[in-house]
Length: 267
Image 1 (tube, rainbow, N blue to C red):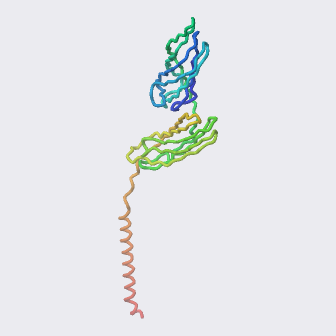
Image 2 (image 1 turned 45 degrees about the horizontal axis):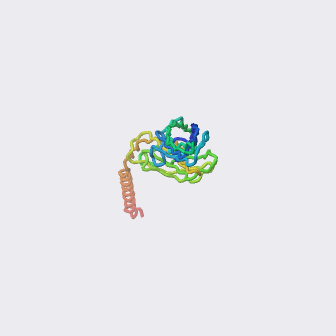
């Protein structure tokens, strides 16, 4: 058995289809399978066991297929992983007017290959300004491109970082193939962060028509510098200017009064 998942790390509700063959000389039925999960896989509820059933009989040499729904850890690397699958079944033997049923079990190794397929590409992501101060405001913007062959739905962009007051969520909705979709959001930085360089994670989730959830991520770097020390207010300078003006007015008034006193003598 060999199965390749057309998905990427972080995808959810991925269908894993396993095909097996009856190599015995007897018909088997009542097939139940248990797939033992380990990193990077979980079932839909976060558990480590995934079960599937095949209700029909399987003749000698015939094949059967079962499906499992898996979640893939976003921190894993593309490549091959091996999972154990327990197969329980009933073997039917007929002869001499009798039919016998034998409950049997076997363990098979299922190689699973995670590809690096990503349906949503994030590009031209920028933080403006790229350098700011604590409690400053920035704008995160970029573009999405669906490189798949079908539309995806419920597309949502999440911007997160330890430098931000709170994560930002941008609802994009439906994204059709090969149609760029811009996104943008204004965000405020925390007041108590120390100067330095901080990573900003841009994460995009979307789902296709099979309810499979896909995840794409991009990282931006933001430089936070120390706030500039504001110069003292110029209240004193304004006061000095007022004092000078008052003195000028006094001097001018003195001149005018002096002229008024000598005017009758001139006449």
